[in-house]
Image 1: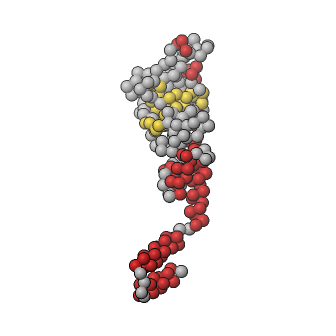
Image 2: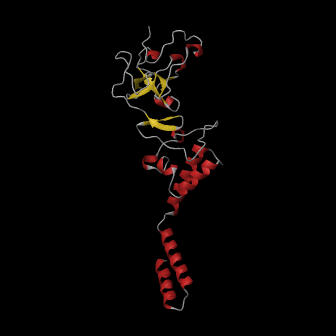
Image 3: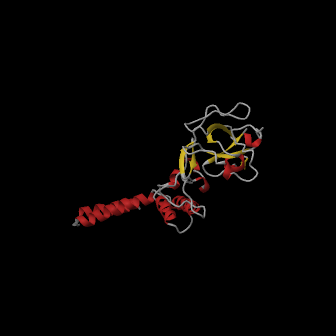
Length: 234
């Protein structure tokens, strides 16, 4: 097929042919060769994977979903940095870091991203997990981290050290792994809320400038002891 196009091009150039006709022939040959190099089946599967990923992240028939799919069709964007066509296969739709709407979908394409291995998603933004080299527990004690006096080095259920906000036990959801916790938080074990047990943990937020223990007046009923994650039970 390419030999035929080449022969046609030679005849055009050799005969009395306008410049416009030659340029059109060159363009057709170039475009045809480009299509020959692309496996239609591979391209279709790749685009379909991106389309499904974009719907899962942004919902169907949304502006953000259309932007995501359009970028994916050009081998660009979120699908190729975080999704199924990224190196390693990317992350699941639920692990995309973004501001989510009431339906649980990411509301903005431009703000959606996937966090690095040393980051967590906090309020829709990837932030440093501030890994602690000296994670603590009830027995070894907890050391402060960052510049906020209410931030301590905790040990996650995955065995890593992280800098998290101290939290009243009555306000900390229980968990067995960080995957059980809301976005922007991680599961810590060996803490005051679980009686130093290593079999489970509670979800605490990553340290930030506004970490603070709630006022006792707004604590949940029955929380008179006001135990915190970084406090050994009496």
